[in-house]
Length: 174
Image 1 (cartoon, rainbow, N blue to C red):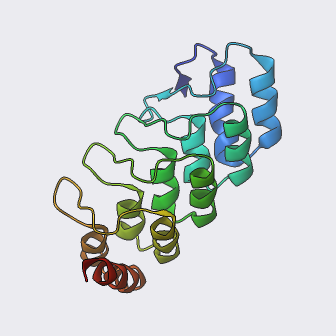
Image 2 (cartoon, helix red, strand yellow; image 1 turned 120 degrees about the horizontal axis):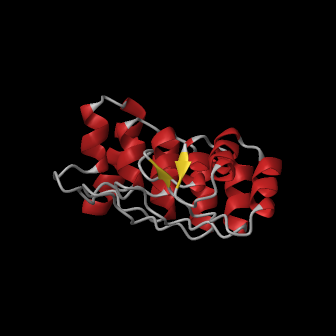
Image 3 (cartoon, rainbow, N blue to C red; image 1 turned 180 degrees about the vertical axis):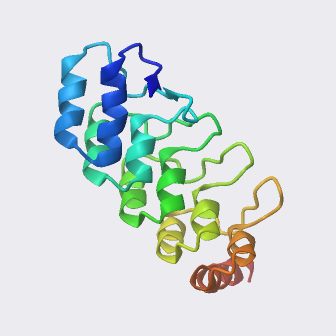
């Protein structure tokens, strides 16, 4: 993995430590190189940062460590996806809560206009959908293709997410 930091092996180590949840390794790597950028993007891997990897893998302690070291919770990858998109896509509800508490933008959208709620709905993560809505995500907002989170859940026949999103949509449209 090549990092955009010019930090060589330490940049790759930071990404790996974030993926595997090794807080000790994150601290070691960040402490060993003064020039290592905690917000460095991984070239060839959609421009993900270490925080994207931690969010994708549900590594809460790693995410907290990275944020404490200055990781930007709203830094987008090459496609406009933030760590919140990654956590929502994988159904990591606690990670979603932590990122939101640390300033993640619940209304951030990727290149095609999908927010974190669209991602959670698409893969049927009903609990994550519930948390995002309670935190303030807009259940009725369509992406650029005109699909709402409910429509995406319906495409994949995600019964629990459909039931919740339909109920929330009905409440907001009344």
